[in-house]
Image (cartoon, rainbow, N blue to C red; front, side, top):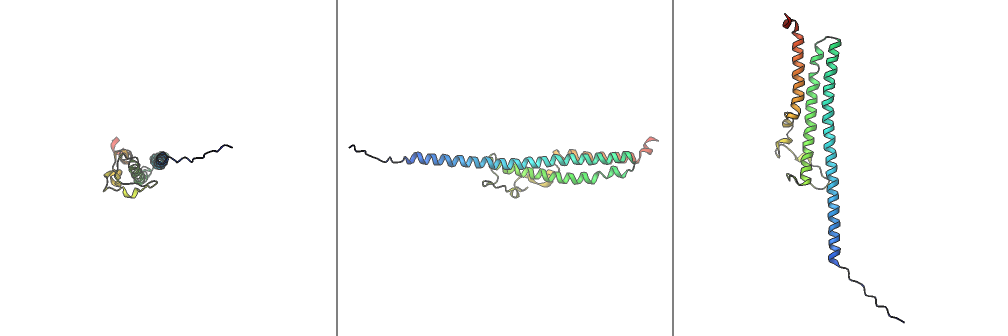
Length: 172
């Protein structure tokens, strides 16, 4: 009869710790990637809303001008101004939210570290004008990406309204 000697191998704890650390790092990187993906989806949604608001504003102004063309009542030209202002305010809100989420994104990626962001946290309320003026609503309202469109539409409507109102004086 042969004797079999069974010696239990001692686990190499150094290798086990490295594997455990590697698995934890991989899990953390995956969580960070998912967090960034969530934030990017919100940014994309805000950008889409902003784009749709611009399109809706132009559509309403164009529709009111078409109504004026069919029934020459000057009020239809000036009726385009209030919705344009409303869409300007709304578009500014979405752009402000987008900028705040970009701030969160930059902090999570480490591009900037303005605020410490926990995993899966989106603390946009912490991004205020005290931290950076780009997060201010009124700064966004006056930003060149928004002002050129809405201000030019309003000026155009006022100019067309005035020209149509006083067209008889201009032709004589």
